[in-house]
Amino acid sequence: MIRKLLRKVFTRRTVKTPPTGEPARIPVDQHGIRREQVSPAAIKVCTTLQERGYQAYVVGGAIRDLLIGREPKDYDVATSATPEEVRALFRRSARIIGRRFKIVHVMSGPETIEVSTFRANQSSETDSHGRVLADNIYGTQAEDAVRRDFTVNALYYDPTTETIVDYRHGVADLRQKTLRMIGDPRIRYREDPVRMLRAVRLAAKLGLVIDPAARAPIRDMAVLLENVPTARLFDEMLKLLMSGNAVRCIGQLREEGLHHGLLPLLDVILDQPVGERFIWLALENTDERVRTDKPVSPGFLFAALLWPEVTRKWKEHQAAGVAPYPALFEAMDDILDTQATRLAITRRIAGDIKDLWALQPRFDKRTGKMPYRLIEHPRFRAGWDFLCLRAEAGGISQEIPDWWDRFAHAGHGERDELLNATPPGDATARRKRRRRKPRTETGAAEGAPETPPIAS
View (cartoon, rainbow, N blue to C red):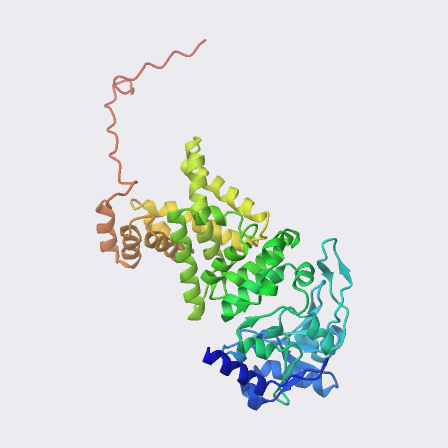
């Protein structure tokens, strides 16, 4: 309680409420973000635009992350210059992208700075549900602040003066750990239903509490996500799962009633005890890799999320009389086709998912030439990691991934020993070769039926 009171007092002293319609201009000694902390590429873009007479600020997530001590992964710039004017200034290093929302990507070495023009608080085109289809009406900085989604994203940082321009009390909300919607939440969710997913992702990522006014309509309005293009839905789900807080995000999605329709089989998967453990292990491992700056494969994560349902379908097809391998591929297509109704999984990621699934039964074959061919497969390491995850979840014996690890790192002599020793429980142990019966003088095997004469 004392800590909350001190925070409120600190907020009131440092962030003075401006006159109505005027933004708070917070100096560096109160917000603490120094110019040196900001990307040089973002500073260069702002400086170039300002020198030509345009307004330009580092905006949104980067400033929000810097305020809470996080390292931003990317930087956005908001400016009074139109996309065409921005492109003219940066020439070959810039390109205009987008149709619904035109922005400019300015490349600076390995870094890409996303530059958007201040938007007016109105839309040029909406559908019957109120979703904005086009948003290229330009306006002032004040109008741009009003049309942003959350107060913590409506922060503008001027690297020249090291000042934060705050129209919607975003700094105060961030210090009070509150995620507050700008405007009427119901109207804003209708304009862009993806904002409901974004609210969950930001709250989980930043450790914020969604403001009751913004949270209340989510469960009732979740059906609006059905009108969102599958490609946008997939992009937002990818951000959510790769945020480093996937476990919390998935948990909060379920609390808010937003998991239905995103991954159509998520409820079924999480209701299965074995599948649930497998999925949460995959999410926890992904979060850990993101936090430690290790590479993360979207294909691996989606393959893990859907694997329990693939195995169920695989068994169904085999029970119907389909051979094991064709049954697996039919199950893979069934599951991915179901997901495609709501998530536009890219062809490349779908290919990665199928590769991981198709490799799993091959790990059962630990005799003959198969192990030699398998360890040369370009996806062997990813497939083995998936195998380890299955063992960790209790779906298979740990002995199987351990055997493959020894085989992959062994010399030729040791590999022969591993192959000659029949692995315990191996379903593909060597079969005894059937002895051929001795042939008679006529060349036919004893006991074989005579060949019927050819009809004349």
